[in-house]
Image (cartoon, rainbow, N blue to C red; front, side):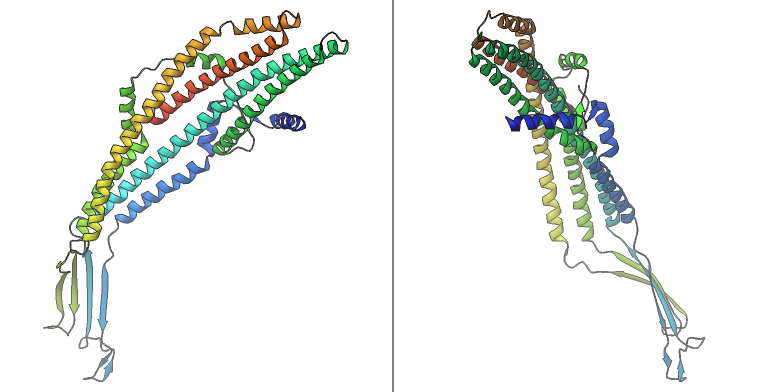
Amino acid sequence: MARMLGFFLLIAISANAQDTLTLKDCENLFQKNNLQLLSEQYNIASSKAAVIQAKIWEQPYISGELNFFNPNRKQLFDIGNKGQKAFAIQQLIYMGGKKKAEIEFAQSNVAIAELQYEELLRNLSYQLKTSFYEIYFGQLKIKQLERQIGQVDELIKEYSVQADKGNVALKEVVRLESLALSLRNDINDIQKSVFAYQENLQILTNTSEPILAVGNENELNRELQVPGIFTLLQLQQKAIEKNPNYLKAVKLKEQNEINVRWQKALAKPDLTVGGAYDQNGGAFSNQLTLTLGMSLPFKNKNRGNIKMAESMLTQSSVDIDQSKTSLSAQLATAYNNLKYQQNQLSKSLESTKNFDAVYAGVIQNFQKRNISLIEFTDFIESYNQSILYINEIKKQIILSKQTINYITNENIF
């Protein structure tokens, strides 16, 4: 009992040091403060810098030859009109489309980095929304249980007075206290979950205080009834068009196609073009020559890298098929779960539409001793489970909609 009281004291203390935020507030903080997003932006900048680097050609190479000692004239550094000096300049010319493939490969890395950023944004945004709604519905459950606890506590006070007078048995007071303790234990379990999601929301928004989720319950209830405007097949098509994880798989295949071309180009020899000047060491004085150079391609020295690139290309094709299959399965699960939960909510609301009136009547009849303690506690426990179940269905509907938005990368709901 002491540990339970200590837990609720902790809840009361922490409630005074919490930020009360809407989902929109959380999203704004997330966009502004999330450190993972800020870090990933540097990866995009790094990839763009690699494109600049890929466009740079090798610098020209220049060399010179100066006479150190002329034995005929017994002269050091004889580089005058009758001496000797020579200069040469060379430029490497990439052949076979090497440079073009290198630039395209670097540009594909930028596209992949941007998709990785979009994927990270999507993943973290999904975590933020699910955490927010877990907190929101957890708070609703706690609020409903606290209302019941308040009413049971009033009954305990009344029955304690009657027990002291000998009008009711002490065991009935104990039974009511046990019911209140059971309700508090339910709050304990829910609050632990709320604390965990509050921690996650703090990390995502980079805030120092736990967040209390607030929203318009009437708007939310209307939103719960909104039907889907797309069929499952249409949603699957949207996912193929916009899901960054799938698009990244497609882009990786394109990159591997570029890599195959690049590796084949690397097997081709490059050309070195240059010019040279020789004052007196050539066939005639002040000789100007054109120089050409190329390695002899007796063997393909890059064949291992070519085979590796071709294997990666084949694998990327399989990855695309796997990603498409995974998307379809995930969407089918979320879509079917949404339809099922909406059907369950409709049935539950219909069967429990008079619950509040019955609940108030049971409280009154118990106070008038028209029903027994066992009947009262059985009803409270049943009522409690029904209310928590309806809240859980509502949460699952919202989370299923968020999952569909997440997979399709579009605000369907």
